[in-house]
Length: 218
Ligand SMILES: [Zn+2]
Image (tube, rainbow, N blue to C red; front, side):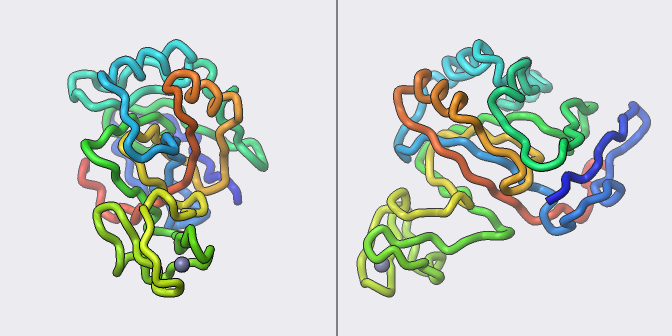
């Protein structure tokens, strides 16, 4: 898979329209890499503890638009030590003007309860922890915390299903934007650092959302 070339420098007068950007996979242009704890109920309180730790290991740097009070950060100096891009060297855009979300930055999400983030594109049916078969009808049998497998007639926790790296169930997520599935993967070094910070193991997945067809900012 080839990374679209995104070397376009933005200026203050220019608005970014996703339709202007050459994209190899037109239906996949809102994809991210997510890292999350393997324990769905795990969260970090207070969240700034995690932010400080991620800044100390230089995965993230300063906050983007702090006045908006959301947890969006520029990548840190050691980002490329932690995230390995596969294949040809991509043109990664790490900076943007205030209105441009089409670049690589890092979002920290922490939800009140465990939340399933799953890919709307290139999704895969999760595998049942009991019979190991893919449960294609999972969206019809999911509850707040379980899924029923119609093949072996068992019910198991959402986190026990194998989501095959295209979904994750957690309260806490580190999202790295603008990465296509399998285009880049976290290095063991990063997973080890996250484990040291939180005392739980972490894993990763990819998720792609529906392409935005209208540019609301214009
Ligand atoms: Zn089953």
